[in-house]
Image (tube, rainbow over all chains, first blue to last red; front, side, top):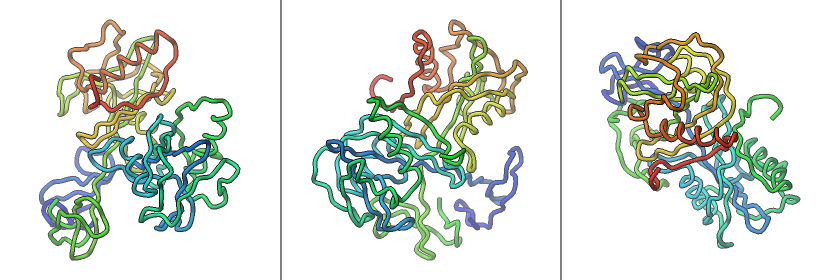
Length: 179
Length: 179
């Protein structure tokens, strides 16, 4: 960030008066350009005990498998975002069942929110950000080829919870400890 | 947003090639300036059955009472953010107990995340964004003078859950239905 998006002048990166941390701000028009974490929303789409994954066609992690997920857009709820991402990445329709995981990823300024979801039909196919889409049983999950740590944790937790038949919501800092 | 923060040229607001919704973007340098929802994090600080609230000294809702909460900053976890906001607004130290509520506020492009928290001592006082800080029992909560709908819902749910002794996590769209 080099220029003020409000007035076009060059901006500063320093602590504005009355604040306590450095910000991008403009000493011509006074606007402070706050930067805040982004929200990634995703679904765990299940069809008769099998899980819908997408092989990524875009960076990062091209060629690796992921749960459908992406950035929450303005104007939508987290559940709507998870449904939209599933539609965009796998052309798949889901019904959201319950909120399942919140992950903190402070090292990349993101939080992830995953929902349990029921895949409504088998008419799915790769969207433009996917090379392949497929259903996997627990035994078939490509553990060595998962795109993201959050996806691995979500699936591991889901399979463990499934054995008990209850799916408690948790928030996890994925930098913290061994997980 | 009128100017490109990367190159300083005037920007467009239209659907970039390969996208499906209008964005601010620059046809000089090609940068797309995505705008995404922000995360507000807050705490429910409890001391022996009493709840710490702050009377706001800043807009919006000057003079109304709120739970300590504010925008999550880059580089911090949601729990860290809730602790920091409690320190900034009430000079109060808390231990986060559990993740409690996620609210979707798509009409203002925000999500709220509230945590149950234990107030660690009584050495609290108004921060610069507060006029007063005080502890309230359930009967003393200033229901008619609460700053935000999310604060009312959080406290109502908390008191209901307290009667059962369990505090299940929920996500709620606060535009949806009567709540």
